[in-house]
Amino acid sequence: MAGLRRDPTARQMRLGVELRRLRDAAGLTGREAAAMLGVSSTQINQIESALTGVSEKRLRQLAANYACTDGEFIDALVTMATDRTRGWWEEYRGLLPTSFLDLSELEHYSRFQRNVAILFTPGLLQTEDYARAVFSNRIPEVTQDELELRVQHRMARRVIIEGPAPIPFEAVIHEAALRIRVSDRAASRTQLTRILELSEADHITVRVIPFDLDDFSRGGSTMTYIGGPLTKLDTVLRDTPHGAGHIDSEAQLAAYRARFHKVEAVSLEPGRSRDFIHNLVKEL
Image (cartoon, rainbow, N blue to C red; front, side):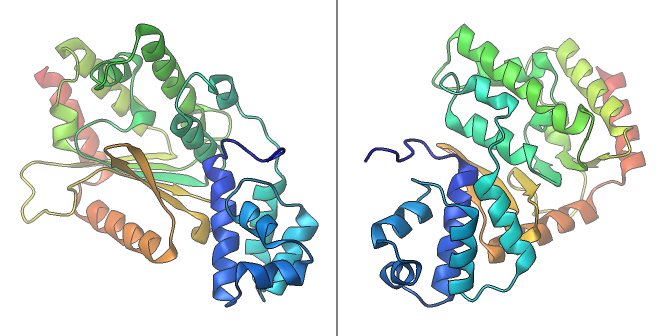
C-alpha cells in the first residue's frame, strides 16, 4: 500500500513492539484497540508492525486506552515516534546491510554500552587494521569496496565513546580475544596498545578474564548490552548465524544484566587488567 514503510528501522520496530505489549497487557485485541481509537484494525496492525508511523496525539491516546500511567515511559515512546534525526549512518543506507545502520542508530540514542567479548575485541575498541582483518575473513567474502565501507562504518561508530558527548562504556574481554591474531603480530600489538590507551579514559572500563580463572562458565558467548532511554527500553545484541539478534523483553534483559554483572565480578579489576594487557604487548 502507498505510504507504507518498506524497510522499518530497528528503532521503529521496537516502538511497534512496545505498543503491542501495552495493548496485550491491557487485554485488548487489535480490533478493540482500533474501535477505541476510531481507526481500522489494519491501522493498528500497521503501527505495531512499524509499517507506518504514529503521531504524538495518537500515541498518547493509545497509552491512555491501554491504562498505561508510566509518564516517563510514554514520553520516551513519543520521542521514538516523533524524532526525525537523520544520523551519520544514513550515508551508508543502500550500501551496507540494514543491521549496520540499526546498530549505529541504537548506539546514537544509548545511555551506556556493556560488552562481553570472547573471541574478538569489541567493535568500538578495534583499530582499522583489526577491523579490516575481521571483515576480510567473512564468509561469503565481500568485495574490496564493501570491505572498506564496513571498516569505515565501524570507525565512524566510535563517535559514541570518542566524540564530544561520550557514553559510559564497559568491556569484559576474555584472554582468548586478546591473544588471537586476526592479522599479524604488528597489528595485534597495535590493537592491544589501542585498548590500553582507551582504557585510561574515565568513561571507559576494560576488564580481562584470564585463561587461568577457575570455575568459569559464564562467558561462553559474546554479548552487547545497549542502555536505552529507560531500563525497559534497553537492548541486548547477540551474534547469530544470520547476523545480530535483538533481545528486548524485560525478563530477558534482567537476565542479561545479571549475567554481565556475574562475569564482571570474576574478571580482573581495571588496574590489573591494564597490567595484564601491557604484559601481552611485551610478549609480542
